[in-house]
Image 1 (cartoon, rainbow over the protein chains, first blue to last red):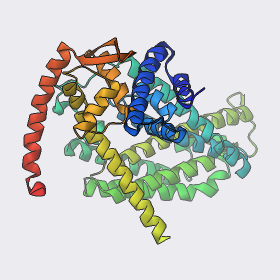
Image 2: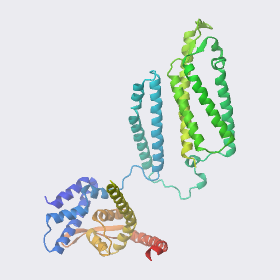
Image 3: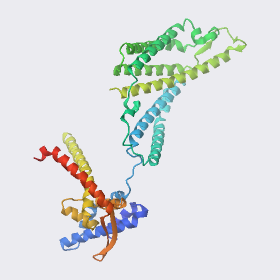
Image 4: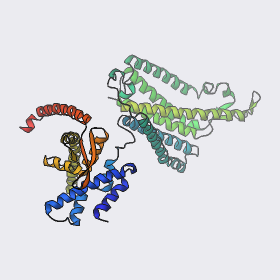
Length: 322
Length: 123
């Protein structure tokens, strides 16, 4: 087998089967013409080194075969920016979920670091799944919409707000600030009142239930974070508009809220029976404690999820801040 | 270390130049091939013809381009014997000729615009 035959066989190996013969026939002809032409110029047969040099210039068999294939891309330019954004959001969400699960796992084992790291090790697999499904979904979308083109008469006035990070009108933003401050004042007032008036938190059950010791550790940090959040909201009310530093502080406070909620969650028990009371309204206090604690657990998970969503909003706000 | 960094910077610059040169030539090459194939040619003879005009094109680019233009209906081809060997001859199809006319209009527009923009550089 000559050097040229070996080269052409290697090219054939990588060519699409349907076109192999046709492409090879043409390629052979062109190569033969070139070799003959070169030999004619030199007035002698070509040496193996000279043939090798021509083949080398012609290109590696894989590259040559590749150029004959149809241009391949999983996701075309129309969908790629949306795919890239979806992928980033997906990976960040996977990271957030992993951290949340890891914190809960550690918290439910009394702050166990090995449990935290074990849960964190799930991230690569989770990220890979997000990557695979996002890519598959967009590849399918691309194939389905391969004839999709951005319409030439698209309307610039209809670019959605989320793409440009546009905020609501100033008046609406001011109304939001007032609502935030009012709720902040109510929340802080409620927090401050609860230790002396537990009925605000436990309702009629305050007669038979008491707060668990975990609150003694985390009550002050909780009040500090709530007060700081109120201060930030008041600042936004007095000085409206976008401030990167304020948004960053809000993000930090939400992070602190997340950590506190996770640690409080790790306690397992948030209410206990008052000493000496064993039943109330015909029900054993133990079962009431169990039910109320289950309600607290669900409530804390909801708080964690809402906090994560709110953190995502603040991150988006920072990203789109001019 | 300084040498390595400057060497790497030089390599990156050369690679970028090669990339931009490829982009610049890609569109021009299609126009050149369509124009050259107003007269019938087979792959290697077309490559020589382009080289004679000063447009060196490597085989790995030209031959697949011919097939692509044919699949787009801009070229027609037929296998014919020449010099005791069968060769695939390409020529411009009627829709290729119409496309070439459109591309030439575009080319003239670009040429005029670039001539204005590059006046200072070319002086």
